[in-house]
Length: 152
Image (cartoon, rainbow, N blue to C red; front, side, top):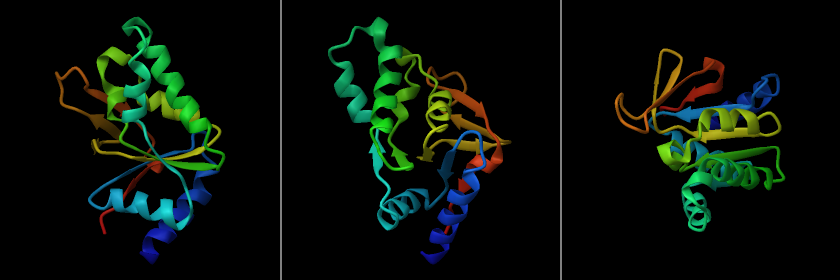
């Protein structure tokens, strides 16, 4: 656990010099890492899927893309701290929402450090969600300094 604290402190220091302050955390123990830094450093964790679903109930489908991005931005901007952890955001890949979660997080991270629990794949400096041919498939080229693998 001490090792995770050191990783977090290094990331938090280094990320200040990035244009976009979003860190995708992935790997075998990534969920535990997010939970640990959330409790240890008092960082709020936001789950996005359920609030998005609840907020879209009364919205027409043609407005989903604009509305979904606004809901996420509002949720994250309401957090007063300089950092926030994000979990459960897979709904943002749904084609009817017409959002690009990577760009959305990049834009928000200009003002706030985002630690995003990445459940997709990482391959050749790419974040990959879904399988080729699936409607939710997305890939995003990313600087490897914005990715942290947590294995133990």
